[in-house]
Image (spheres, rainbow, N blue to C red):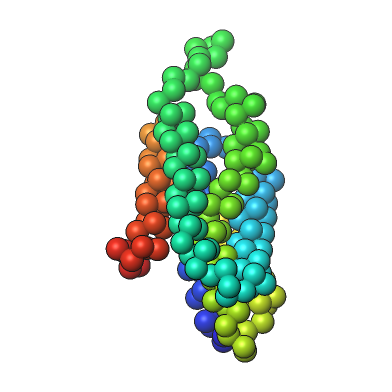
Length: 201
């Protein structure tokens, strides 16, 4: 593949991670610098890792990967999305001054914790596994260069998405969290519809 083709491919694969990062930003009233790095590293790393795994698995596993990847991604995004919607409908506990509290420390930690980040990173990068298999058929393609482009571009877009979500959602956190959960579920539905050929975007 040419550099231009790799860039277009990278942006295409990064779109789900970008959208999910926006949803994560919608959940937060404030963000630390470390949050941006975590999102960029998690999404970028897995988006770059999956094509390499797919590449080395080879064409013999292509049918198996393509048959189930969209359902796995849908299930993961559905669980996270429903959890966000549930949190959006929960009543905030008032503070001693009678003002709504910010997110509790344990929830703030969980928002960027290992469990949630792992689930989201895998869910948004499963399609890249099948892409890696297809790259294996291209003799003029260097999987390490391709994966590096994909990882870097995904990481940057994920950090940008987090900022966009936080900027929009800070004033409307509860509604934004519910909308974010719905968007995650819709992303999962889109992945399924694309893979079974009903939707072509």
